[in-house]
Image (cartoon, rainbow, N blue to C red; front, side, top):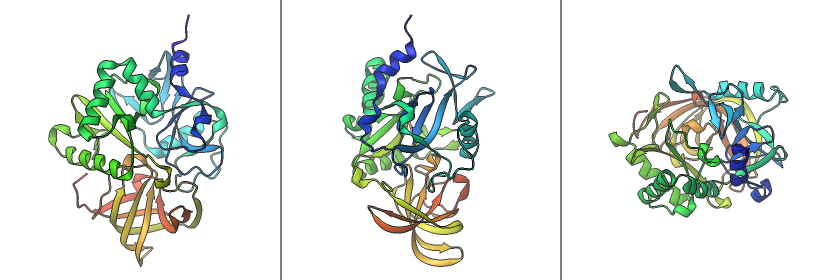
Length: 343
């Protein structure tokens, strides 16, 4: 009797060696213990490791079926018949519970305090977004071909530069959700055009998405499916924080600023430029803002004034040397002035 799980994994998994040390955002990995782990952003400070989160872990009584094996999600749960999001501060506690080899007192990544580091040597492989999309189009021609072609046409984006993440990364369509978790792997200019069109469409009543008790400004309903975008930099030279050196200046700061550049607000991490800044009651002209909470992608726009509690860092990367305030979780960000739309 064949094992459907192993059969699908054999088709979808790519060897870790093909990453060539360059780990981009939104990749799914399969660990040797069966856990599905999701990469976060581009800052992976320890050679041979990446930062991310366990998304699904094997559990005999888990509420998810992944190709014949029971799993439990870390990031969402069914409660009284309703899909509920599990927030980052709860997720990180569960990560330690599931992976008891971890030391909760060990220092976590400075710009992404709700993630963990995972050695690449612990993994059987990863799921390449473009390869997974090709396989999903073969497995689900009526759905995956329609979703991908509709999205490419709507966004005027080359389908060969699209991929998938979420459950589609390993070939599973969540029939209760019907989400198309699509990755747009373009240049900054190409991705901005997609983001801006999604933003415009999200304000059309029939396209609006309300999920987990909130409105999502760059997700849309289109032709009966939920188009959930993820953005990845096509060229490594455009990636912020890659090979960064990070140093803490001050652990706890209060910053208020007005967003002057929102061109990186749809990625993980979001990276914004702030002007008219007040840092711990002292004025300064500008400051960079970094947030590794994926729930805030597309939330903050030029002209909005925000206040945050975060960590002041000195960062050195290919962009140069600069200071930035890093915020780990959306709870620590407040909008004081909204220019684009109410959330």
